[in-house]
Image 1: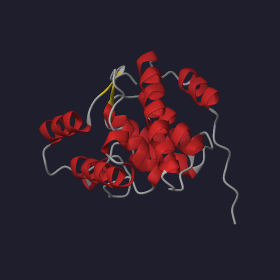
Image 2: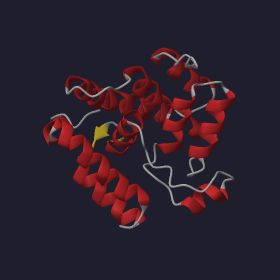
Image 3: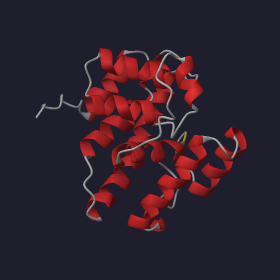
Length: 188
C-alpha cells in the first residue's frame, strides 16, 4: 500500500497561497470556505460518515490556488498543475480539479485535460465544492439562493447545477437541512 504524501497544515496552506501570489480576497475566501467545509465535515463525522477532516481543510484552503495566475475557469486546471508541481497529495489535486462542481467535457479538453465533467466524487470533494458555492465574500448564502444564481448564470442543464443539487440532497439526507444552513448571522 502506497503511503500518502503529507497534507499541508492550515498555516502552511495559507502561507503557500500568499507566497505564490493569491490576492488577499482569494485567501480570505479560502479561509471562509474552510470554516464552512469543516463545519459540514464535522457534522458528517458525527453522523458516522468516514471523512478526512485534514483533507477537507487543506482542500478548502487550496481549492483556488490557480487564482494566483488567472481568475478564469482555467484556474481549476492551472491550480491542479501547480499542486502537482508542488508535490501535494493527489487527493488534494482532485479536490482542486473538482471544486467547481462540474464542467462540460469540452471545457476540460480545451485546456488539454481529458474530457470529463470533473464532478466531485468523494465526500471530501463534495464538501469542498458545496462550501465553495455557499461562500460569497464574507457571507454564507443559502443553498436556494446559490442554486438559483448558478441556474441563471450557467443554465439549468449545466453539470455544476445538477451536481450541486445532488450534493445538497445527499448531504441533507445524512445531516438534515438545518445542519447545512448558514449560521444565523450569515457570516462565514
